[in-house]
Image (cartoon, rainbow, N blue to C red; front, top):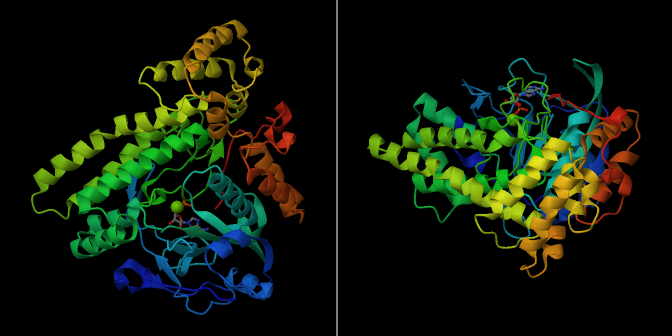
Length: 469
Ligand code: AMP
Ligand code: MG
């Protein structure tokens, strides 16, 4: 196998990382390998055994410069001064066929100096979950890290649930720079490192940015788009801590995330999110909190801190409008409106209110709007009919509302009960449900597998998700 590494992070000062190799595993077995992504990354393969060796951490491919990255972060609102890659190792970077720089990172690859009490490992469940959901997100057209490989380690690891099979995920990202990467240097008063990091982030992600304040502006814009995109498919990240918030604006760190079935603004899946901090409808607020932390860090770079604070505050205060605009564009498309007017927000909101009142299925309700079965999602049919009249009147002026709706409303999403069934089967060695999900989710806007588009039966509902790290 040849990976055309072109590393840049490893050349940054020592303060940014600890260089170390992954810990090898007992009996690696390749569970999944993303050949299309490998091609995009210009990885050449002649022997699949080498793929298994490299993406289990048993051999370090030529040109890799493995390291664990340092970062900190606000977790559930509280600052944690040292996090870092506790179970991940960056192998290095490649320039893909579009000449975009991509990180290749192993997750679950053993202890690092940032592991604290953890074992540095991951179990099969979260590895396959991230594999499926991140690739589904990509197919939905939403910025995300991607999955290159999943390898079973042949070692059992201890989790709350007992002994579980270990696995390593190989993930690909535009970078692993997080808000927390900036926070760690700002909080320590390491201004020189903060400046180096800022220059690096600008060069890598926003070369058009004129300086730290402009970087902030770009990250806010990207993240505003991202959160609106999540909401448009009913996605709840579940752990939007600043260490899980990407500077590149990609969805990163799939933990207790989930797509909701029945629509509710207050929906929470994560069993550790007891205050509903990261509830579906609270994601815009939490994004603003995260961007405020990035702003606070970047202000350290300015001599005139008062002026910088004023400018940064204006950028953060512009976010609600920015998110609202992105949200309106996404949701208007979902009801067939290509270029929304501000008044369309009310029409969308009244539909969401009806959906919430009746517990309508988020995905299937929107998908059905382009046909004539949406009313089946509602118990209060009269209320839906009244809404529908307004809707029909509004879209009569649109060019091709059906096409707009079908391009904005997926038929199939990674439903939570399907994810659980897939994991249960995989633990017994049956990867058929995994393969089936991967196939259907590769073309989410086309219905190819009706079963996977069906909401859970009462007995199948999986109401909570676990970090499962
Ligand atoms: P997360 O909530 O997955 O973003 O993880 C938060 C922090 O905990 C990161 O610094 C992780 O590297 C660390 N962490 C999570 N799981 C483990 C583990 N099994 N071993 C060591 N560190 C871990
Ligand atoms: Mg994380």
